[in-house]
Length: 639
Image (cartoon, rainbow, N blue to C red; front, top):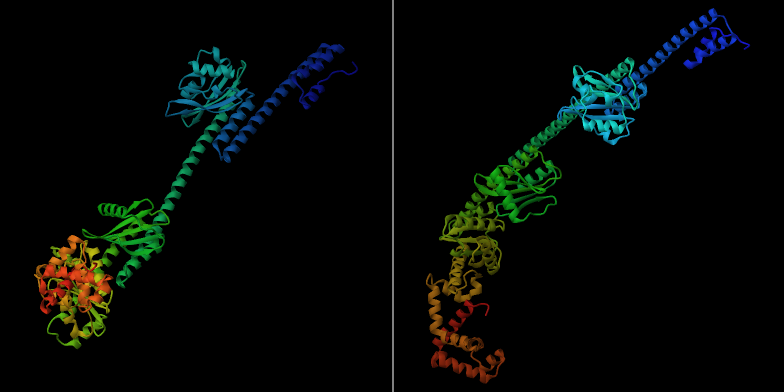
């Protein structure tokens, strides 16, 4: 053959990592060359040693690969970011290192008391990937229950395991035959199973079992590390949330302290409800309404619409019942109360959610608002008493020390030498209860003081002294506005203008007579002045309490037949009489004013004579008729 085989050839085969079958080549060549038996024996021995060296090198190479895989797994654990990624890497390495067809991992479910498929690599069966194994069932169930490795070369024929239809069906669908399972252990506790499996019968060597146990240990560490990381992250999140809560609470406490200081300063320096509203919105943001007990606006800060009256009533009632602010939609309501008395409400539309401390700020603002309203009321009542006492002295007779009265008035911002009108309010404005009388007097005091005037209660009536010269307009304004407050018609009589302290008492008595005259004329619920009623009003005002009955009787006996005739027949006898007397008894001028023929006027007056008697034009009767016609017109001013 040209070349004689020698042991050196085996070294060359080892050097180029030849396959085991190639080590038979030198022996075959030596036999073919006819080498002696002793040389053949030497070559056989060299081959045996070379194969042992090759096997050793193969085991070391395989061990190096396994150690590299374990090292990579440890590296994965060191940089653990996602548990699923690490577990998939471990299962993939187990499959590659053991040369298995499939590798997979199951974890114990303590709540359900079984194990479930967590990760697979090389699996093709969806049913297999969804398997759940009862504890003790199948190879994996037994490993999970016992905590010891188990291996089978042919699972379907192995009677050591408790087979179930579901597990066997999943294994058959995946085509698995040989299965190795090792436990995932944390200390003495088994938390799952790591598997390597083949689709053909194959025994697993001891080294393979040891390798899978090592990978399972890494997987258990990964799972435990992930659990610790999750718990750590959860704890950090809770700490972060707690820190955020503490910061928010600290901030809200600081806001509350700041708001408390600002509102205390407001009270001390005599601030108003508007200042409280501004302070609240400065601290809490948003917009705010301050309302009185009737729902009227006291202050507004920012853009906010007034809620419906029914919504306000309901929310304020809830706030009073709960003793704290309440939320309705985007608005917060805080009742403004003093004891059992409702004084109003604060309505806040915040820019951000309110925490408890912020709600306390709103509630404290409501308390401060109640104090300010009570203080304002007390001041107003005290000032009202002072103003009332001054007006009472001004309209009393005899007048005492005009200069002293002027001085008192100047201190209240009232100039007695400027024109004023006196308005007397009728008894119809005052109900039977003392609280209603006080309410009317309180309104009159406020009404007069805001206009630079005075108000007082005198002789069972309410009197107002108001700057101005139009007594009739002032009377009508008082009657209108007070009617709204009381919910019932109010009569007001006025007199003036008057200038100087000495003239006010006279003006008061004229206003009083005007008020009486309005009642006598059947004009209750209206406002008028003595100038508007003329001498008839003054005359009736002097009649007294029986004026209404006397007027009716006088009208009936004097011109009643004419008034009744007009009412029954739709004639114009009363208008004709008024025109006739108004032009001094001239028939032609009366006809011209009435736009009728003179004969028509003559015929109408003849009919009047038939109704009233032939002497109706005599001076004494004519005066009574004219007075009656004037009274009739005053009783029906719109006619």
